[in-house]
Length: 271
Image (cartoon, rainbow, N blue to C red; front, top):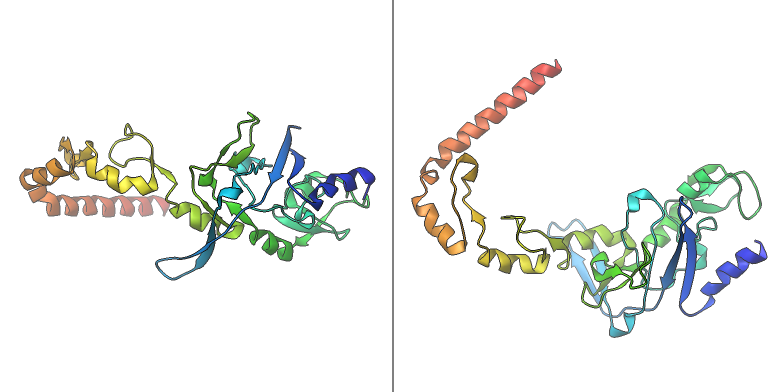
């Protein structure tokens, strides 16, 4: 490894570190890591198909941690590590934590995209050819703890793609491999009112309370022509007198019949 490359990685030896990287457009990005977490909460899915653990942040975890995405499919999704990743888990081409790590013919490991875009190995100058996925490294990266995306916001630096911990957001850190499980059910996940898009943005934890007060509840028979819109109290009163309510079984049977006809026609067109 060249002296310049060594110097770049020496910054992982202690304390907060900034890890430079660049995207395909040449834009310079920085990844910053810092300390975090404490108590552990074990989450078990309702159907018992899996569990994952999450840590609640302590006040000392308010240091700026940032990550800049390296490809289009990441978009601007924040990936903020709870602790400083080992240099051994960082790609020597993009200088960021491996994404989809692969082993090349020279025996070194790189991000798949980096290996496919680069002609030569930065370590031994050998031609880069992908051989196999590095499952062991991928599993190690999956064990790294990150801050929930709903506990991060854009950093005040103004740099695009740079994020920091939001003390008002989700307080949990989770394993990278369990990210989707947590974030899909996170109480801090932003949601929209199902009754009317004009209602203000909400957090998932506040949706139930909002629905009890929402003034834009539609009649379940609105698709048949009922024009009622009101709150929870007037909604329940309305159903007692709604002319479509007494026809709901007939209307449902009609819908089912139309659906069956649509499926049959679609199958006939494919023949």
